[in-house]
Amino acid sequence: MEKQELYNAYAECEEYNCFGCSPKNQYGLKCKFVDEGEYVSCRWQPSEHYQGFFNVLHGGVQATLIDEIACWAIFAHAKTVGVTTEMKVKYRKAVRTDGGEISLRAKLTDITRRLVTVHVELFNEKNELAVEADVVYMIFPEEMAKKKMNWPGAEAFYK
Image 1 (cartoon, helix red, strand yellow):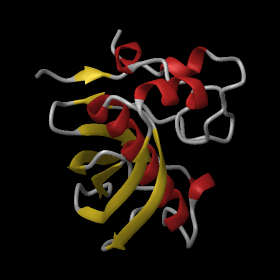
Image 2 (cartoon, one colour):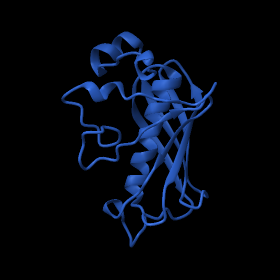
Image 3 (cartoon, one colour):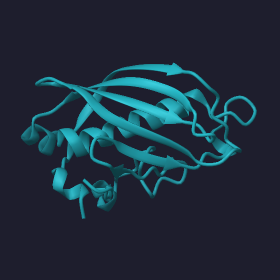
Image 4 (spheres, one colour):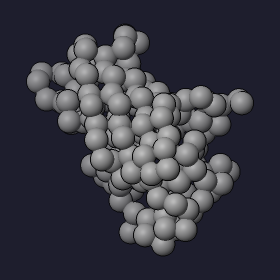
């Protein structure tokens, strides 16, 4: 499969204001995602607005980026929507806010009837593996996802 940028199908909804991916949230991260086949990826430019310690990306923001890309991996590869039930994060190296773009990639590693585990890697501005996480989502059957989560269907993310 060749790389394909994922379209944010939710962005068309007036009330949609996700901190992680809404292009309209003035305080948000405005993440965009690419389906690369096995992985979903994201490149993101940190700024001083998201620092914890001096020029270091706040760990909570890193966890938010991880949770967000895991969700999009589920959109693209599990073809449904879900909610986070567990996240195990291992912070290995600093991620700077003043050193340039960072990247993340996520892939599904375990799928059961109701649970999906996504392994996420976050690479710092030097392209070093800085954070690893395993995120578990409880997923919804498609009809329930449409009713309760406004799920537009997986095809809506591919334009």
